[in-house]
Image 1 (cartoon, rainbow, N blue to C red):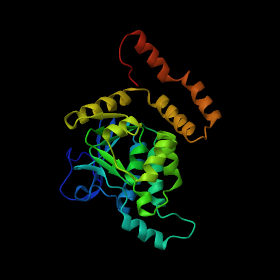
Image 2 (spheres, rainbow, N blue to C red):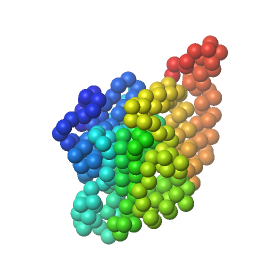
Image 3 (cartoon, helix red, strand yellow):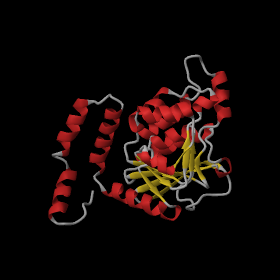
Image 4 (cartoon, rainbow, N blue to C red):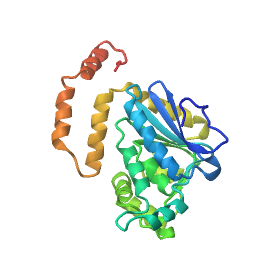
Length: 266
């Protein structure tokens, strides 16, 4: 785990790599020979990186991507089976992976998944936990749980249903059929699609927009959106954040910048 590695990482497989450039953090999954299949060490590394990013006040947006020709082939099935064999009866085999995905969804800053290629298995939920997903027009996805005899963990199913709708969740989970980028865009899995030579331009544009907006206001609204999506809105806290925003420094700068016809400086 290093900061400021080369843009396309390394011939040597490793745990995820962190790059910080100004207000933007990028985490790159880095096991390209195995389509960035996630190992237990990767989960530990991701949790540590999420904490470092959230503790850095200069970071305003996170981009999550993969090295090579795929985003990720998901969590290593051998690791799932091994953990399941040794886990207590009341723990699910994918609980460690589930914790990581839920932590990503709950990050305070906005997140973009840069889908540089195919996304499979649990990695489909990892991407879905991001606020935005921009994919290359040749990417594809499938969720093979039904084909493998695996009942997926409940928070992942809930995320599919809340973000894609019950009908699309049924199709993806129960058929285990692969779909391409155009269909991913149609059902809302992708928020944008781009040809390979324009992928970074699209990601950079959105990252710059998010990094330039008011961080406290965005943090509060992201929290409310996620709470609404999961049917557990803390109304009192949301009301308090809204009231506080009307007296805060961000709205003063936003109104002043609007009147002066300039970009705000938050």
